[in-house]
Structures are given as structure tokens and as C-alpha cells.
Amino acid sequence: MTEPLEQSNPYALTLSSLGWGQGVVCLVCQNCDWQFLVGTANKPQDCPHCHTNQLEKYQDEDFSKMEDFIKPPELYLPFSFPQEQLNEKIQNFAKNIPFAPDDLRLDNLQTRLQKIYLPMWLVDSHVSATWQSECGYYYQVKSHQEKYSGGRWQTQEVIETRTRWEPRLGRLGRSYQNIAAPALEEHRRLMGALGNYEYKKAQPVTPQSLLQDSVQPPLVNIPSRDKDDAWPDTLPRFQEQAMEESRQACAANQIREFRWKPEFSNQNWTLFLLPMWSSYYLDDENKPQSILVNGQSGQMSGTRRASMKKAKKISLSIFIAALIAFALTVVVGLISLSVQDLAVIAGIGIMISLIIALAAIYPIVTAWNVNRDR
Ligand SMILES: [Zn+2]
Image 1 (cartoon, protein in one colour):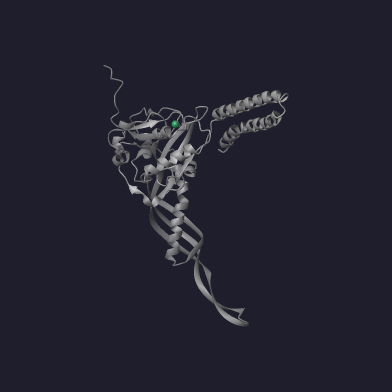
Image 2 (cartoon, helix red, strand yellow):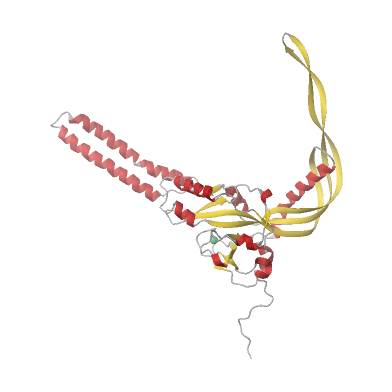
């Protein structure tokens, strides 16, 4: 007897057993390797990151290899930037590009608008450490200054604040919560485009409420950096907190030269999501140009590309107008051989033709200038 080949693996770790519930799928872009989780009811067709490929369903039913990367998030920042202001921003972006490509239209940008949640790692860890540092204590010094005013010398009391530095050392045993670290390879570039997020406004979230949005269903981006890659980025954050607590423990006003030997234990890794809108338009070469908007602050960033084709067309029309003006001038010039008074008009005609011919350069130069600033 032969076993059927297609048999579902009873040990498979499915999205629903990871806590995502029913009706969630994992989609992959073969071009840029970005991976997303999304509600099945609202699957997007195109990759909202590179915009050049169709998203495909992740083939395997078993997510055990990706388990750490697709655990439901602990915290998120909701999309809080008002929709009307977003529309206004997109409109201004489209309006402010001279000789814009035909595809760069408000309605196109709006229909391609996609909500994406970008992941960050959050680490909890217990830390035991010995530390040493210099703690600064403020003290005030009274001195006297002589000042000449109103025809005589006057003595003025001056109080100055100085810092007294004292060495300190200690031992620390603490648990720190929610230390954030980038979970995407492109985190730095994305944050450069999107600006800062106010982490203080983070809220707890469930997968069900996260993906519930019938108007603009969001995609949850899956981390591309693993814990080993992200761990070194958390160390300065742990140190900042330990340093601040050591300062408080010493009742010092300032702290410097902080050195410590930390040992980390009981680590717990979860995910934190940041809101972003993405959209795009096609330039002259049909290449998608991305537009990214911070879902909290509304900071927008996009490549500005003018259409050189359009600019050249307009330049050509202006140049033809110059040629027509010149041809008329030549006619007037020929007539002026018999009618002397027309000579002045012919002269003005030549000037006007020259000015129009020069103006023909303007569209090309403007478009070139826009495309040069990347
Ligand atoms: Zn892609």
C-alpha cells in the first residue's frame, strides 16, 4: 500500500497556532524579499515596497523556521495622522513637480496608497552588573565683582554653579523592559525618510484589531534582521538606562566615564510596529518612484522626477512658435524693402523671435534640474 504524498504535517506551526487567528496569510515578494502578513479578505496584488513585483503566497504551511519573526506584536503605534491632511500633502507633492509625468496624479497616488506596519524588536532582559563612573555634584560659589556705574565703583555679589566630580562604583541588578532595536535591514534609510516616531504613544495590540480596517487594510512587514543582528543595537540603550539609574542612586546631578560589566539573563523578545503609508508613481521610463509617509507625524518623502519627454515636447512647441515668428519677420523684412516704415517692425520681430527661441530652453532645463536632485 502507498501513502498519499499530500499529507498535512501534524506538527506544522501555522499562523493561527502562532496567535494570528484565521484568515491571515504570509505574502512574499520575489524581487525585494520583503515579507508581509495580511488578512486574506484584502490581499494586495503588488509589492508595496519595490512596486515591481506581484506578491506571492508563502508556499509552506509550516512557519516553525520563522516563528520568532512572526509572533504577534506586543505594542504598536496607530495611524494617527488625519486622512484629510494626508490627501492635502499628497496633492501638494504632485502639484509641486514641474512637468510631472502623466502618471503622477492625485487619484493614482491615492488608489495606490498602502498602509504598512514596520517592525522593531523590543527586548526585556534582566541585567546584573558592576559599574564605575564619575558622579558630578553641583555646588555654588559666591564671589564679588567690582562695577563702575553712576560715577562710582560698586560691589556686586555673583553666585556661580560649579560641579564637583567624585568617583563612584556599585553593583546593579535590574530588569529592563522594551528596549527597542531595528528589525529591518533598511531601518536606517526608512527612518531617514520618515523622521521620528513618538514611542511614548505606543499601545498594546491584538492581531485581530491590527488587521481590521476595511477601507485601507494594512500589511504587517516581517523582520529581516534576526535577534543576533539586532542585539548589539540594544546594548547602548541598556547602558543609557543603567547609567541614569546609577546617577539617581548616587543622588548626583551628572554622571560621566560610566563603565560597566553587564550580564544579561531572562531575555524576552517581542515586536513593536510603526505605521507608514506607501504609494508610488511611474516616471518616464515606467519605473516606480516611491512615496513614503509617516503614519503618526505625516512626514513625507518621495523621489521627485519630472518628465523629460513632456518638457522636450513643450520646448519643441515653443521653438516652432519662434520659427513661425521668425518666418513672419522675414516676410515683413522683404516687404520693408519697398515700404521703408516696416523696417522697424521687422527689427522688433527679430528680437521677439530670439526671445521666444531662448524661452524654449526653459522646460528642458527645469526638468533636468528636478531630476538631478535625488
Ligand atoms: Zn518587492
